[in-house]
Image (cartoon, rainbow, N blue to C red; front, side, top):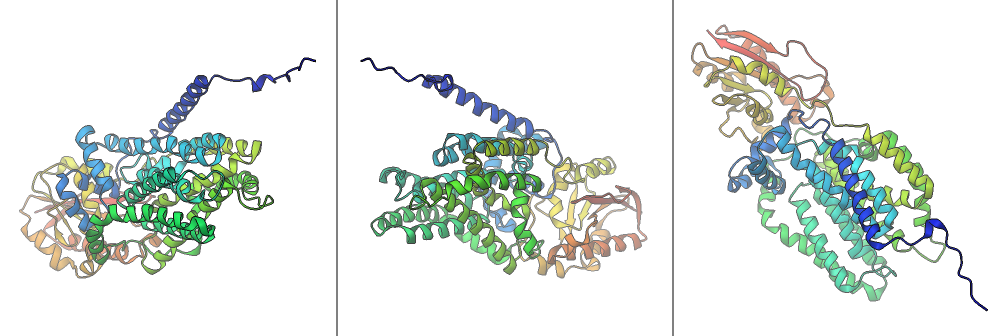
Length: 529
């Protein structure tokens, strides 16, 4: 009797492998194009303080960058990349923003790769969609800072870490050779993160905690292999980072974040909302929750490979954020932009949950992508470009610009004409491309208008101009840290001092009125009679 083949439904007909690859490539290209479209809406927005520092440090001979960073307190990788980028593309806002855009766009296929191999093809596409539209990444894709690079490296490090360590002892565990390759890749990614931002140490602490838990929970026969793999990953990262350790030790002793205050409990609990958006956070948690229950189901006698990967990512995210928060209670260094180190594990987490929540997860992902697509970067991060443009026509080479907020000098020198002289509360500035944060607060406490400003006024020839640039304090709560409080007080003192000097006549104040917003400056142009 002949056997009748079962009827194949139309949607299960085989598709040639070449067509699948082509469609996949086109789909990923479409998400990359979407990422570029969303992340070039405010591409020409003017620099703020930190972006001026980025260009000022990077736009110098390569060999001088490490020395400048001893004063600044940052690691070198981003500045070295920006140095090469400036040599190729120039130093305009659009040119330097493009480097961040490229790094943010690369995070789309990186996220697709990271989650596809751990949680399946559906997760890969959801992850790529979320990476293409996430507003936190959109903001820093249009800023000349290192945070897009932090996110990209974080995604790569998470993908390599889970493959190298979390799947050990499961049916999906890679072979020893592949595991060792992933461990080596993790070492490179973690070292690159450490060379990019100092908060990567908290990320590394999260990885270390997750690895220790996996090591303790591993069956006895597998512990030796996991220990060797750990030595390759963490030992390799430390070995690669070792050349920078002397500079780091100097920076820890002499620089820091004196502009920051201790974070509160609300700052800790608000991290997911800062990275995902408050509305999107609720949608993601509701939709991904169903997927979490599937991935963490232990009814079959234990966690499967994807469940282990999920638990590892949860531990990594929680440990990273908690370590940063606790460290900032001891030595304040909390800033929402630094949370870029925590975006990668959180993004991979919600992606995995959505992918395993069925239609609810897919609907949640599409809804969140639509919400995120409507959130762009700030239209203005500072008014420094506007005030520089307003006062520049009245200035001549040899006039002096005095900034009562020292870290504003690099961005002021970027926008103002060449040939001007610069000074801060500390006196004349020789290197206008970097701020010297070494022992900054004690040095700032020792400044006075009579000792540090009076000599500048005395030396200014008659008929020359002096521009006093000071921050506009709209929200006093942002000016209570040791550094910012001193800047606020000294700004008032120096403004009063120049207004009382009979030799000086004010010719312009820009902006004439106090405007709402953050990182705003006021410039007062005075001529010496």
